[in-house]
Image (tube, rainbow, N blue to C red; front, top):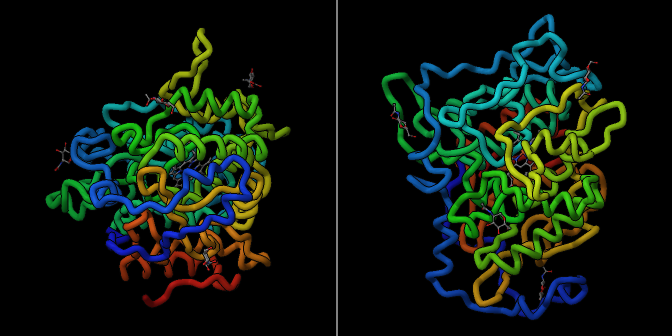
Length: 439
Ligand code: HEM
Ligand SMILES: *[C@@H]1O[C@H](CO)[C@@H](O)[C@H](O)[C@H]1NC(C)=O
Ligand SMILES: *[C@@H]1O[C@H](CO)[C@@H](O)[C@H](O)[C@H]1NC(C)=O
Ligand SMILES: *[C@@H]1O[C@H](CO)[C@@H](O)[C@H](O)[C@H]1NC(C)=O
Ligand SMILES: *[C@@H]1O[C@H](CO)[C@@H](O)[C@H](O)[C@H]1NC(C)=O
């Protein structure tokens, strides 16, 4: 485990007054009264890891022996994409067709769900279906960094940041640098030698709750509202998203839909938690209009988004999962790299259109607010100045982050050293972000 759970309430404070709420249209302040939760309810927060035979646990996780694992082939001289390989920066120039015409290594192949792991991230599921990540869904830091650049033209800085968050936050393995993009596949992610599977469980992969994965997802259920299924596509939610956005999944429309999802969780989910990591959800929704649209027009329309999400409309107007998250036909990726600064700009823009409170439900309608980094009494305060703003997401790496009202994720020394060495490659220290060195 790269982040250990501490039963401490760092950064979380119960407050009696909610001045921000009163000013927020649509937030019912009467729901937010101070309430002391019972211990029984609070213990839910400690049980937020998928496990065993639960959805996302190792028992029902698709399995093939590690000997049968085929790594992603990477780019070739014939099909160089933007030149990203071995976890290094590519040339950052996009605007080319993906997959490259003739590049059979990156053609779509539908996953075999009895063998291949897929999870809550349509961007990575699609990448695996096209062989930019290993098709069995067990990937590595290097594959993640290369794939994000070559396929989507994510900037090197953001590609490294997301891959590190995935690897360390969701308890991928920092020795093998392997990560499951879905359920718990510990005996392959932590495999040290073919004869010694190190453990059966303990590295939950991207399905792990309240790490990278969190409540109020666009198309995935809240963990506690679905007996732990926080990763499968939900057609009802895809339908809501399509209706609210009118089929144009742009910044304003998705900001509105994210707000709607927040209100839904606040109302329905007595274990609702919206913490610092939930900042990443605004980043994910920006990917619909920044990374998924195709040139030359780059319009985040229904045809594009439904292809990446594997959504199809039924005759009765509802939506279902095709099982095939796919790059749209004749797709051209974005021209300029999508950087850390770009995504932070989009996170803040969406948040400020419909500000909500960061915190967690305490039961009986109570809601405790969080103080952490740029989150002040539950509100995100846009930090002034670009370098500082660019650091917004770095505060999630290598810090002790509250991932529940009584749960703090604290990176281990080993994770910090990995983070430091990888971040070092991006030259990000020069932006003045506080990079963790000793803790
Ligand atoms: C290493 C890189 C990445 C990691 C570790 C990662 C991980 C995740 C995780 C854990 C979630 C679930 C969050 C939640 O809703 O609870 C998620 C959601 C999402 N990701 Fe990724 N992701 C990565 C890169 C990408 C890229 C490059 C794209 C874009 C093409 C993408 C598109 C999305 C979208 C659209 C969602 C929201 C899905 C929904 O809410 O229904 N991701 N990602
Ligand atoms: C690894 O775990 C899976 C369950 O996720 C199990 O089916 C498989 O037999 C295990 N393999 C080894 C080598 O222990
Ligand atoms: C899909 O989401 C809706 C709305 O949150 C929920 O009522 C329904 O139970 C979910 N469906 C599944 C199969 O989880
Ligand atoms: C993709 O391009 C090919 C060749 O130009 C064309 O035949 C095909 O109709 C296009 N498909 C779509 C979905 O636009
Ligand atoms: C948060 O709000 C409480 C109550 O209004 C106030 O006493 C406290 O100083 C605020 N804390 C911060 C960090 O703004």
